Image 1 (tube, rainbow over the protein chains, first blue to last red):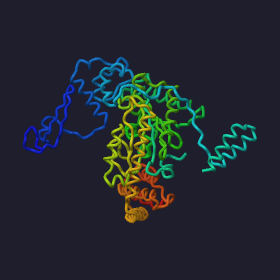
Image 2 (image 1 turned 30 degrees about the vertical axis):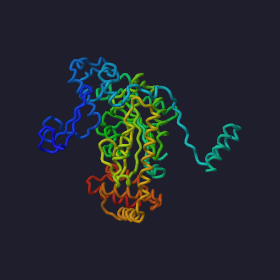
Image 3 (image 1 turned 180 degrees about the vertical axis):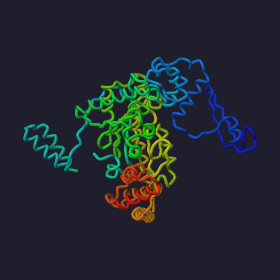
Image 4 (image 1 turned 90 degrees about the vertical axis):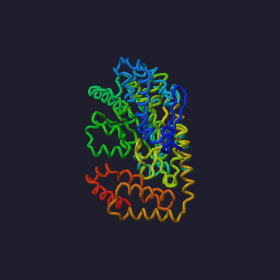
Length: 162
Length: 335
């Protein structure tokens, strides 16, 4: 396929742009693509991609970026430039600007995972060897803790059965 | 329990290790990028106190280490053992880490987020790793109060981690998928449900020794359980694909390649990192295919302790040539 711009060279770069939901596609040669500013497609870290995504909003709507976070002092320009948010409060301050991008990254904007404080720290003891368990069983029987002993006995049976 | 790479030689076959990481931030400090020196000091002191209190209850003992007290060699070695992230190592001076004796549990303090809880085990152990990370998260939250929003979940410096703050990953050994050009297909399949496939040391690195890491990317709008279960399903599919590819290998040719690798490792006097990684990967394949007996060589442990930083730490050698010599000697002694 030849370049749609110059019609001379082979098209090596395929560009798809979506503006207000309208999709336009172009196939260009390397030279014409570079002339239009489409260079350096190497996939950088995701935060860079994000920074460039956020950066676009600033150009589109320069008005939004003027206010700053009352807590850490970051402006939306800072957030857009680095792709990193200044503090927890920034999510409230710049919520309107950030939400569309969170949706683009994650697909959804409603947390469905863990709510803080829902589990207690109890580290399970690793199950020991059969001989260790037998020793434990003996000590439980000696202490007349028969219910606990029964659990250990079943565990030993299970391990020996394997 | 032994550290993950020793465990991996015992329990790991195609799935080498499982890791879970939770990103958390204190609600009353700006994120690390906007913190000054005093804030870093305050952050470390508060986390240390919380860690000490948890240790005092006897549930989980973590050792608190200021990173500026750790020698440079050891920092590189910690990255190679997957104890800290490359990013944490690049800018470590203000940072600290709390870590368990076997290094399976660690809390990085002052990385991209205030706190990164990490649990890493050998073999497929995602559920166990998440369970522990979850408990530690709850205990730390009680003492520190993490930034959380009802709609957005746990708030993080990078919006790519917001929500659960969970990054779960498994490391897979895929030599035959790799040599038969199937990694792109594997990567596509993973991509469809929001997982990514990368080379061994995570972001931006080239796969060495045919080791690939698969991890979840989406953290908002998906629960921890679902993210982990997606990862498990895809990991199992990839394992099946690798097994199918292995089944179609010419056994005589494979035996030849495995024993040639064995011979080179046993007798070489100079081993550069690249050659070593390829050979040790072949040995790992040979063990899993029953060509070499399991306990004669511990390929994953060797792979980790023969990394440049780890070698430098054990032998205090400096030049690449000295390292290649030390690597060859160490490998000879361990085979």
